Image (cartoon, rainbow, N blue to C red; front, side, top):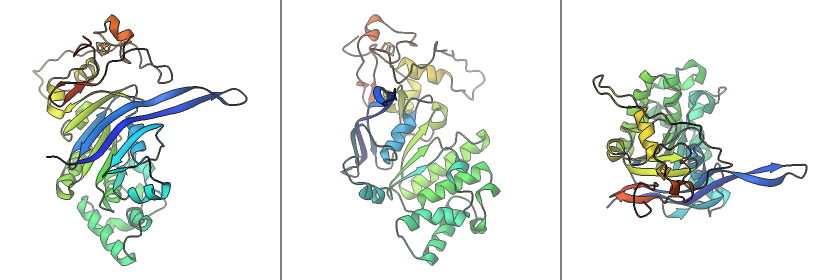
Length: 325
Ligand code: SF4
């Protein structure tokens, strides 16, 4: 029986919109709107969607880098939304983050050694000598060399910088790593090297990943399960293979139709979505996707579809399936 490490329930992040002289709240941007999912120990969940769909905001709320408006984040049996800021600082030892832009997330004035040992200092782990030894060990683990320790971030390539970011995240032996678009800023040729490294590290250190990406192609090989987000909501979640082979939600079908395939003889029809993603400050009534959905029916404009199981372990929020059909 898989052991649950993280349980997210009804998570919301609504940013207030203020206007006028008195800065009165006149509305809100529903960046994340009622998101629920679980993550088992040793599992990778890919969280995918276009920019602005709320996936990165969700990742940041899990670390409480952003305070949730509502909802529960049960990590290792403890609700992170209920603990104090100082308890949260301690909890961050078990939840680390790898960021999209390795250059922006590494202090340019610090040596690699200083960057990687920082989480050890923050959490009071080891003396100077032990930390030095650990940095060398981590550099080796991520495929760099101990002589890199004295260098600065600008002396590395993008892929190497992301390896430094990964070493820093690993330093305190976390249980969960939130990887926020960790390969989107890298050349395609380097992306697979970094993905393979993350895959190897997961096996070696029994890590659990929440892997945020805007491209379904990127998360395919690394994810056990994939959740697709649209306008602040999860619209489909399933085992990776099932989602790629039998996508249920019209939005997932459209995203998948844009993923290139290696076989030149395989022809697939690209589904081009009309219109833009509506604003999260004024989401459409009913199904949030109805303004762009090629399958939209009249009920879609009125009733919000619930995320419901359509096959074992495969959930989707669409009126084409289930009771409301
Ligand atoms: Fe399309 Fe309707 Fe399904 Fe929404 S509920 S995805 S609009 S068919």
